[in-house]
Structures are given as structure tokens and as C-alpha cells.
Image 1 (tube, rainbow, N blue to C red):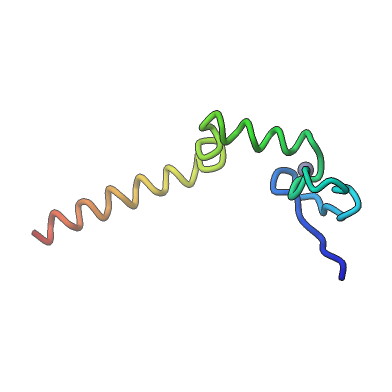
Image 2: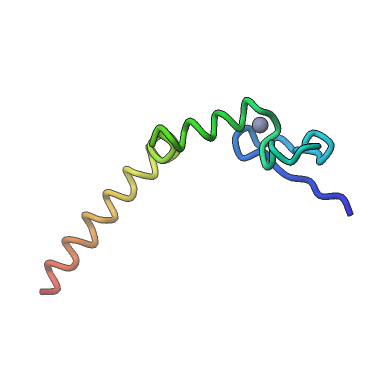
Length: 72
Ligand SMILES: [Zn+2]
């Protein structure tokens, strides 16, 4: 059974052979692992990943807020 993981940072396919110790999974390299770690620990992950999505989300919140108000 061959399992192929995809690195969540760079999207590269990670062959199981690159992860003999299991410490790198699911990342392709130590570098990608650290990038992910620092993004989370820094609290920057969501901001970096959702600049445009955040804008959409705010508009949705505003829309639903005004909807709720007009309903009352
Ligand atoms: Zn990677």
C-alpha cells in the first residue's frame, strides 16, 4: 500500500520515503514544516491565507447583520 501525502505548504507530493522518522509528515521538508509552524504560532496563518476571504467574510457578516436588523 503506497500512501502519498501532499505538503500543505507547497502542495508538493510527499513520498513516504522522505519521512523515515515520521517527524516531517505531512510536510515535504523541514523547511515547510517550520513555515507551517511559524505561521500558526505567529497567528499569521489565517491573515495570510484569507486576505480576500476575510473581505468576503466581513461583507457576509455585515449583510447578515443588516438582515437580522431588518427582520426585527
Ligand atoms: Zn513543502
